[in-house]
Length: 444
Ligand code: SAH
Ligand code: SF4
Ligand code: F3S
Image 1 (cartoon, protein in one colour):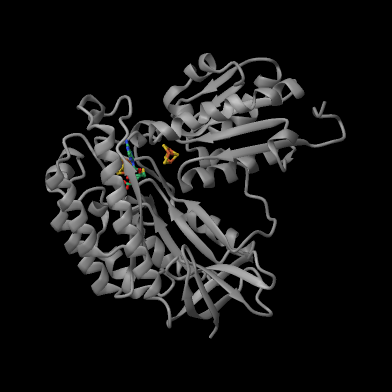
Image 2 (tube, protein in one colour):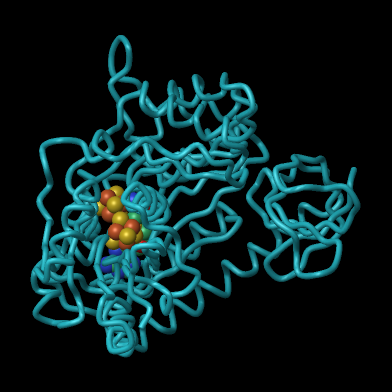
């Protein structure tokens, strides 16, 4: 048996699914439980507490929770003291239902209630099955312990905004994460400075709708561009990005910032979902394909080497061949660095789930066509980098001896074999080759 003793610290294992916001939340949950004496377990087998930080965005994503729980049955047999918690968006969406679907689960905690984890863990240790999925009036960030001071890697996420008020017809996020809330400017700046002191040089600001940021500032509410301009003044912070943005919230100053703020990287993830106005309307996206193309033109006028990536959904209810062709046309017109491509998945409780779904094979075929086109564009975008010199922030050793891996300004993975490069180094690299999902280069 590997249960906790008086001498050994309790061990926590967190498995993270879904978006970057969950990655950030997992880090914060590890810190919350760290303040309770938990240290990280190397594997689920060693843990006294396992948290599955889940995603509800598509059916397959949500089902992973139950598959994973099934696989953990034996762990509880081997260690009767093991507690298992479900956190994240499935926890929020299904709440106590999870307890009835799986006898293995001891606690269920929604994304707004992570500051309550210690109390819930104690309840679970007393043999209760604890559920907390309220959207509390207080901000969870005000109740999380101060972040530890330990040195860390050079790249970090920083959540500045949560929730969404857009209600796209297919999407669960407004239900799982609640309405839009922005963290106050002073908290964000303090957290960023703290991260930089601990070795971070590259921060991605996160929010389900990050460019709708309007956090309370010293005078009035600040926009995202104002926040970025202020962050750019933090010494030691070299790179800023933000994700995920909605086309409707790209305001003039944010577009201008792409041309004016050197630390704002030439990379933007800007989901468009479809190139058909008819489908965009049915999706409740609030803009047309033409609006998006005009926006891209303005962004590229501000920052000519901006690399754009996007999200697409194929086979949304009532999508015709002509609608799908319009999506392919938009992709050809823009030229993306890469994209996340999804087959529509009906989600309970969303308006689109009431509408008739298209046959599976139609979705599969369109997804394949879309992915083929995106792969071509990804290759072209990578090959266009060959011969150029770009900044690369190195993160860790690569698989080959003497090799280091990092991310370019445009967020391409770059491998370099050279002496004297350490994690956290930002170097100018001449790109010499393009492989399947990465670039290779030499010190410039
Ligand atoms: N806030 C972001 C998206 C968050 S979800 C935005 O507005 O762009 C990430 C992506 O998952 C979405 O952009 C969309 O492409 C995809 N997605 C969301 N709901 C989906 C569904 N029901 N079926 C298939 N894909 C979906
Ligand atoms: Fe979902 Fe739309 Fe909000 Fe993005 S903007 S999180 S897709 S509802
Ligand atoms: Fe998934 Fe929730 Fe993120 S549904 S995509 S984990 S906000």
